[in-house]
Length: 268
Length: 291
Picture 1 (cartoon, rainbow over the protein chains, first blue to last red):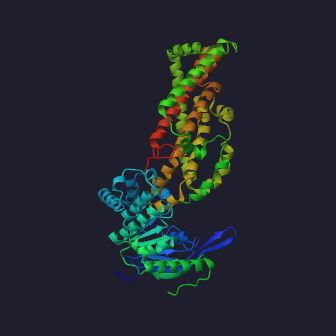
Picture 2 (cartoon, chains in turn green, purple):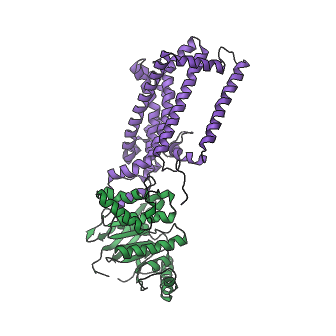
Picture 3 (tube, rainbow over the protein chains, first blue to last red):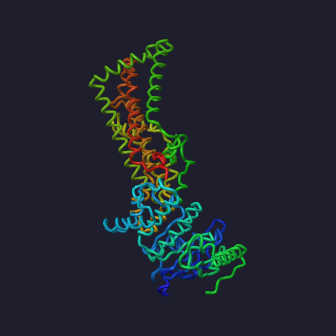
């Protein structure tokens, strides 16, 4: 990887909600770094506070304590260098806007001049393979295609880091495989840093260069695993590699331990 | 902008029965595919059936002919009425009172609804007052209006504005409360500021509600315009109806009642047309294209 200074740095992040029954500690203490150009997957048992973590990273939610630093600046509001892809594409895309206008809206809001905006939108939509669907509305597209639009919107925003919150949880298995390869391709083509949150163990190993395994709530980073699979991934051959099986078994066991609450914090 | 908790707002619980509230624009979609040709024929058959029944009932003298003239007599009377200048001036007065009252109600409701809907504190502070004021029938404030403004068009306007205002106001509140948290988070994550989110997220979300509110308000305003003219006696179709009642001129009275029905139908048709244009993307209007 190009540099050693982290692009995204999370330090002792914790989040406690005030519920009617008293304080609920959703995130215990999370610390990790993402270096520029990395593709990092975050995986954890369900209900481990993945979405809470992500909202804190994105500046949508203030952490109770600890800090998130992006490119040297502390995140207090949604940073310009970060783009998000949400799981619920149907709610994240605006039904009153065409594909083109959905992708263009963030750029328009940022005041990008029209000619440049159009070029960015076209390139991003082409990148996700939807060049033919510019003037359609999201609701005229299948779920997988809608999520492609959301990815195009994030790509067109020209972020340094692309943060994806279980983006393929709601699409069918075949579409999912295509979209996974799309993420790998976008990551390589654009040299963007990607942080990919998922609950799918296979997906995390297949996609990631690194996998962060989270514990169950109150959450900490249970393991920081380097995925030493070849850079060229393929749905058939990569998933058939013995090393792939080893890694996924390892992550699976970690998740099981997390569920049982046996895990201890990874030593950094 | 914490829009999520406003969803709990007055909520469906606070909605009067029969008030389509938030579900208004959506419920339309479940009525199934509309075949324009088929429904026009059915609609026409309905009108013919109604006219025939009326004619037969009047011809059989089930009711004293002094109170129920035949349909054909009424229709003929309507044609003569259409040739009278006083009919057109009465119609003009009614339309102006209706239009001005509706405009005041809608603009006031949009402004008040937006301000109160976007500020959770104001929303909580006004909730019980709104729920108290809203069910008061416009007709109940006629004496008050007359006391303040005399037997005038101004008094009529107070009544014409009152009920439609609440209709639109409540819809604006629901519309603003319906802003999806993910949609709003998306906009925030892409750096859209408050005003930009108001323009690009809140407004389009609230639009179907506002248009439903407008459609309901337009019909109610028409009813109240005629009512005011009947009771207060300001010029218009309503007063003319009362004149024909005391004449007595039953065919004239019925002819004008038909006119008011036609007006209501026209208002509804026009707002539906606007709705289909503006909300072409909305589930109630759009036809799902196969992906």
